[in-house]
Length: 372
Image 1: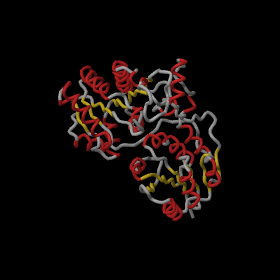
Image 2: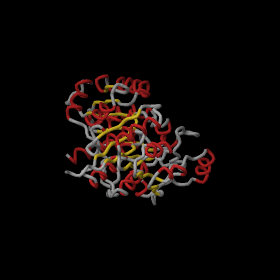
Image 3: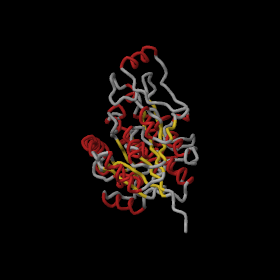
Image 4: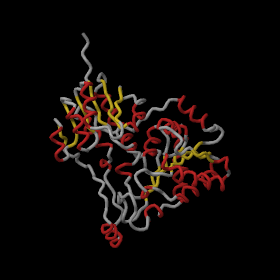
């Protein structure tokens, strides 16, 4: 009789960007365990991300508000051999403990460590995103301290890779990967009547984490108009339901300045898979540091990104010097602060000019053509 395949559960993370950053670890786990059956446990809102992923055999989704007891009961029925817990929350460790999964691997974090059979110490080189108080910000501004930087091995992708290395996975990073089918792209183009005669650029002006990540809307408009003049592109505005008002205002202003035929607003009108298809269809994505930025990079589309309150060394879309992505940092003493809202004057994002982002976007777009 053939050997029974090892059943591995990966408890996925809860945010879109973090989920994409976890895909290199899933790729390495699949390399190390080619015969294993790998299941991803994920919030419902991210289930469609994993259903097309080549490193995953099955998906278990849990609903908002679903109790830990119910999730554990469903997991127990599956009789998993091993669980890897990507989040650092007590709940995620409790789920696999109550499911009685024999081997449970995750990071040691206080009392939850007792719920794991292998509580992994914090990774050497790992950096926490310390949220600065207003007093810390004002002290850095008064001393004119340079913007804080971080070493190359500080990127969060390494946190997930270390966990899968405990199961034999290679801890060296590979580019994040999401698979989008050609028919999904074709359907997206047809739905929004996107012609092939002009370069398609996507614009993502929102950021779910908070306003501190958002480049000013008027800057997005000005950059989009300039890029339209230089490249004859068509703009596709993307985002979630919460971005509808912002996107409508930006679309209206781009249309007024560059012509209504220059822009299509799809914000709040796409499913998760349709968002992936929109970003795959695009030749460039001008975006804040947020989930769609990671998706665009993972489907192979170059991005141009203003970074203010966050650090590309920790959560950026690239890990190599030859990356096509263009990341522009607001070089002010108080950045990165990792706050949702700026407590002073938003100087980090305001310091990034339209001209800087237009030049960055053109470099990113040209890198795509050079690669082709």
